[in-house]
Image (cartoon, rainbow, N blue to C red; front, top):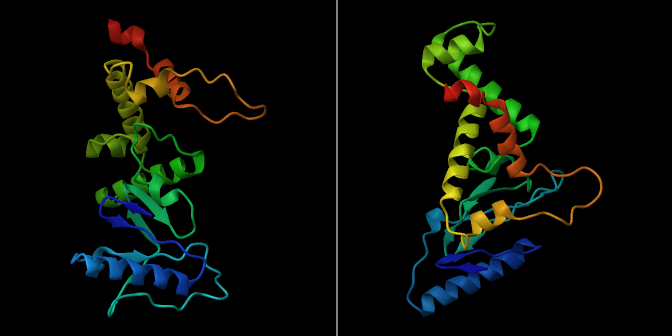
Length: 199
C-alpha cells in the first residue's frame, strides 16, 4: 500500500513481509531513493502469546524495529487492533468515547493533579482543579465540540463536514443505535443554562 512517499506492507507470514520489504528496497535502489529506516517499523498484530514471532526484518543490512503501536497518517495503530491507543490522542472535537475509557482518562488526570499538589486522594476534585486552574477532560472536549459545530455552521454547503453533519440518517437498523455526534452536541447544549448566560 502506497501513499505519497510512505510504504505499508502486510503479510500473513514473516517471510512474506520480508519479501515485500526487499521489493521496496529494490525499487528505491533502482530509482536512487533512500529510506529512513529509523522511522520505519514492523508491528505483529494479534500475535499468539504462546508462539511469539521471533523473526527480525531487515532493510538491506539494517534491522527494522519491532513496535507495539505505530502512528500512520495520523492514526495510532495498536498491535492488538484496538482503538484505545488512538482514542487517547484522538481529536476531542469529534470523539465521544466509551464510558470505560472516559472514566479512566478522568481518573488519570485527577491522580496526576493530586500528585502534583501532594494532597490526599480524598481531596475534592473541584478543589484540585480550582487550585491548578484546570478543567475536567469532559469539559474540554465539550467546549471543543461546540467550537467545531460553530465552525461547521460557517462552512459552505459543499464542504464534507457540513454535509455529514446535516445528513438525515433514514436507514437506521433495529436494535441499539450508535451514539451520533449531533445527539452528543445537542445534549451538551441542553446541559448549559443558556437563560442565565443571556442575562
